[in-house]
Image 1 (tube, rainbow, N blue to C red):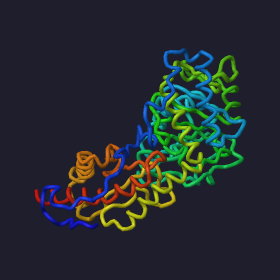
Image 2 (image 1 turned 90 degrees about the vertical axis):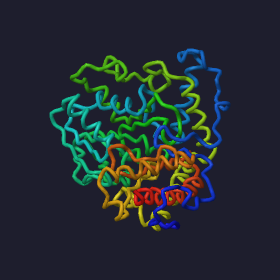
Image 3 (image 1 turned 90 degrees about the horizontal axis):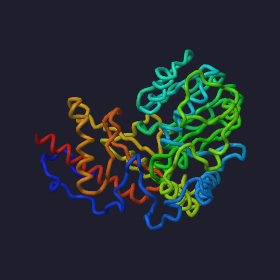
Image 4 (image 1 turned 135 degrees about the vertical axis):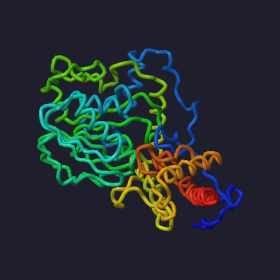
Length: 401
């Protein structure tokens, strides 16, 4: 660290602040920063006040589907549809509609994965469930997964900053379905479509979109399951993807189950156009990798911070989580350890340097910095010296009593 962390002053004036400031202080992990240069004036508002069932409304819905498919390089026989209730709604739709014919392996290493475990065990009450869990910073044993069973997992643990390294662990000759919550991974990490049967996400993450709507992607194997499986439980209307044993294919042509916000749809189209302008998926991946590279370079020199992920190959390049490893901090009582990142976040928010970077409430005390594609890599680089300054400031406050 450039500052002397052992000084006992209790004012931020005791330290020389970094000279540069991020162009945007928005590093929230959801909803995430809007795309560079975003303005409400860029949105096409002609559809507002019109029915989403109108010809024009359906054309706008089809456009967001078509642009998404093209950027993701989705296989021709995979379906993509807009569904209610953000990524949560899309995941629940998959769980309630598809699970039951086989046993299921549930993988969890952070809070959202744990929520899906709870739903399967306590809401669906499935009889044959294996839960494979790991603490924050770790992955479960991927080699123990049985792909004769259905498998449910998050690609990237949004609250833990830990991701699966690739799709090599997923069997190509699997008999069960793979259900992947990819909300903080898609558009930022390469997904092997041949290994994934159901993928869910929302526009709020890497695209910097608004909330309320989710996306569900289905492989032909998932469609076959939908049309052959009749769940044993009552199905809420917003989860129904079949009628009379056949897929409701209008969902994947812009005919949504319930009324969408057309303003949110226009905002998603705007984000997708920006993604196309920067080179599509390759451009998005490049920006997130640059953000991760800046953090790695800083962590390699830090004497107080480390990545929450225990292995570099599983460290997220979107929800980048860091923990405090300074022996002085670790010697503090647990309540003071938890207060450290909260105070760092408060200081940086007051300075309008970084908003919403305190770690997730259930995670170990630390910071969480969003590195998705809408965040400028130059802003991540400029932010990092401010973390050193804020940590030194908080340390001095505590030492001064």
